[in-house]
Length: 56
Image 1 (cartoon, rainbow, N blue to C red):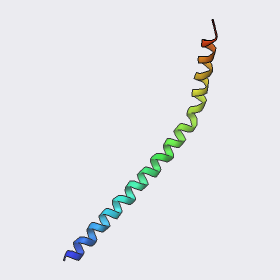
Image 2: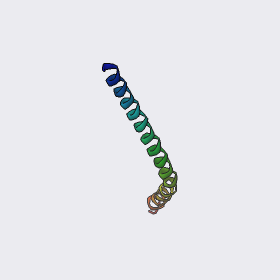
Image 3: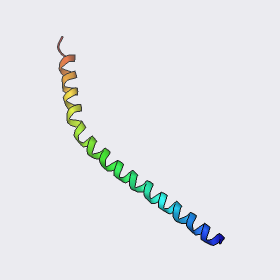
């Protein structure tokens, strides 16, 4: 009986590790896709800042 309980606990832990790993991979993928679009807006903001700084 104890072996069955230990085996089910191991399978639950393995399933949780696989689930957490999958969530982390999906999250990093979408975060990378989101950051891929940001540098263009950041560069535009930087150009605007340089233009405003050198106006005097």
